[in-house]
Length: 537
Ligand code: NA7
View 1 (cartoon, rainbow, N blue to C red):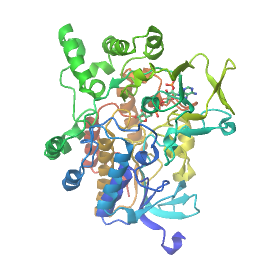
View 2: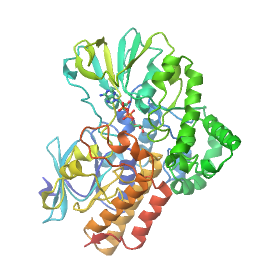
View 3: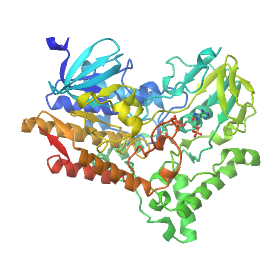
View 4: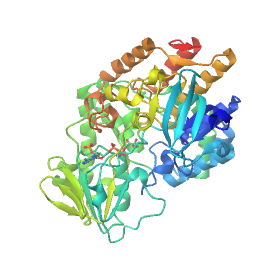
């Protein structure tokens, strides 16, 4: 009923997670009429959906924050360095309440289609509930890791027990006591689940295809003194985080690894390792990402650490990666993950050479015909990252062109913020911007949201209605992105970073790897030049 004006907005935002909440806040402050459409029944995005046992972030709580209000920052009291999902969900609810955001969020509303109407120069957005919204701007805050690979195996519907994808975990706790549980996936998610439920379940079978490098998490409780100390750093952190390589409170400062003496290498690696954060990965030595010999030396350092804990040669063979380098895809923090395999109730089943072929009523069936019986099956099988949240919506730009069809051929964006051919569409957490792969998400997302809000504010001040990235500028961005990406070892490793976890997905590094600070500078330059590379009418 958009003709009646009820569903007519200046901006429709999808998603009430970290980005969407802040986007609503910023656009509303411009005086715009904005509505968030959110599939879930509550706010939180990632922190609403991923309520699996052991879910927590790997960014320190004092930097996984918003920076638009010092007051808000100081009011929130994280309990520990890396709080678990319930606390983060609570924090986002606190933000939504304190900023009075809920009145502009429509829950349980899933967007199915969005079409740019060239006659009216506005977006028409359809939902599963049969509503149609009409908006000048269409802003996607869908998250980078929100399209779960739920249908991983044929026959899932025939399973007699309970089956869960980690990103669609039920609100009621699952009782694992005495149960035979199978878990597929040992990424950042699987590791958190395994180490958490291993002591609880009757018997746990871990189906392992690719082993992971890990860093042991140090997760001290925050005392009042700790909280006072970081709260005093608010102005410093707000300024610093967006200017680092990965949006964390640490940055490369020891130069290239290759230039150090053996003694200094050892000393610094031990120091980073003992930090118990992602510093060893994201802010130790820049040449770890580009120099194969350096990467191998650091990988071997981590392997030795893993060997010391695993002890058993058979477990070492199965669980220590040798076919790819440390840091060339996500390195999870863990707490007792390796030791879980020492428990008598935990069994490790390798499925690289003898793959899982299907789910049968009793459990999982492997290629050689073996059936592993389970009562509960957990799929920690990951996501169609970056592009999936957008290609699962039928998004159509000028001349009815389909984003899904185009991205089935090649995934491309302009700075991860716009797509040529799709005027007045703004994207966050989209491919070719820094994101989850290599960035503290709150840092990257706020920078993207700010850029979008400032762009829309500029358009309004100038009396402009439509913005579209030019083909030339998009080509330039894609080339720039690829040139940096292809100089790293990340593009030589298979993972969701490259889209290689989804059959047929075109290969490209999904996250900008030139650094958060550099990316921000590029975005600011475009804005400072009156949105050079975009046509504004
Ligand atoms: P990931 O990192 O994509 O991990 C998925 C895991 O599932 C990984 O171990 C996969 O093995 C495994 N997998 C997927 N399909 C199969 C099949 N068919 N057989 C066996 N094993 C399979 O997803 P996560 O949810 O852990 O993490 C995603 C991000 O979310 C993470 O990086 C954080 O930033 C938050 P593979 O490696 O493909 O051999």
